[in-house]
Amino acid sequence: MLSSRYLHLHEALELGPMWLRRGAAVATECTPLADPTTPADTTQAAPAVRPTISPAPHPAARTPDHPRAALLHSLKLNRSDAAEHTAKLPADRPSPVLDDSPFPALRAETLSAALADCRRCALHTQRRQPLAGRGNMPARLLVISPHPAPQDDIDGRLLGGEAGILLDNILAAIGLQPAEVYISSQVKCTPHIPPQADDQARQACTPLLRQQLDWIQPQAVLFLGQPFARLDAAARAQLSGGRPHCVIAHPARLLRQPELKAEAWRQLQTLLPHLNNITPAA
Image (tube, rainbow, N blue to C red; front, side):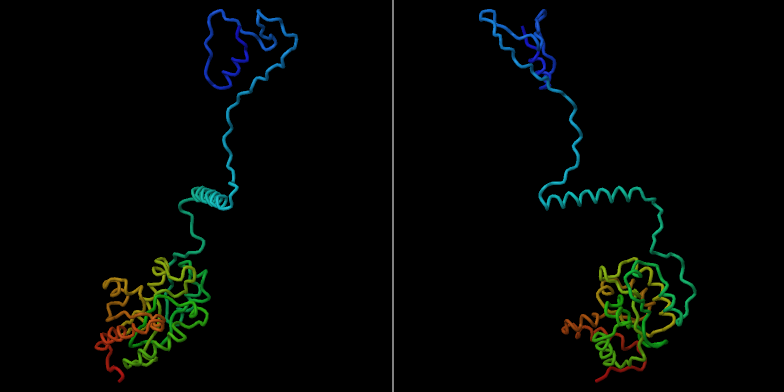
């Protein structure tokens, strides 16, 4: 006779159905097994508890105990939540900070006011003030930097401080006085985070630079800094409006690396034939 406890155990271990011989007797839990060759035991055995089989629950997310593991776990969940949130946003959701409307008709005297209202890139959230440029119009030479420096943003003056003094001295060495030069930048606002202007900012401001070229009517253009050196000749020609131009290291870099001044001087010499009635200082 087979005890039903074996059947329950077999079921609990998920071993499948137990095959029994036809006619085999199965003792219930309340019927103790007895050996016919030994005297009956009058002590009643405690009934066995049949284990309850239930499907395993879906494992819940658990934050690991180790601090670093917990941090990684949290970041993973945050990335997942952010991706899910982004997926729910409509594809044509308008940007809250950008303005794609065309610039109104501009005049040189209204440029600063137009820039103060500009929302065409995210830099307007970082700047203290936009800097249109400084100098006289027309001018013999237009100097273009990539964007205002953080100190320019504080002072409200493009290319001021020691870098501005060095630039004035360099230009004086080729016979140009400050009154004959206009200083501007491709991007009119100062980027702080990150400290470089992106393509969006350049695309937003470049039409203003072209407008300034029409107002200033320079004989030549001087580009400052590596961003312009990395451009091909066609891109620089477009930015300069087809005028003679050259690229030198930014004056702030020349202050840190004086050994670059010799190359800057050689590049400036290429502009002299295009600047009327100018001879380099001795």
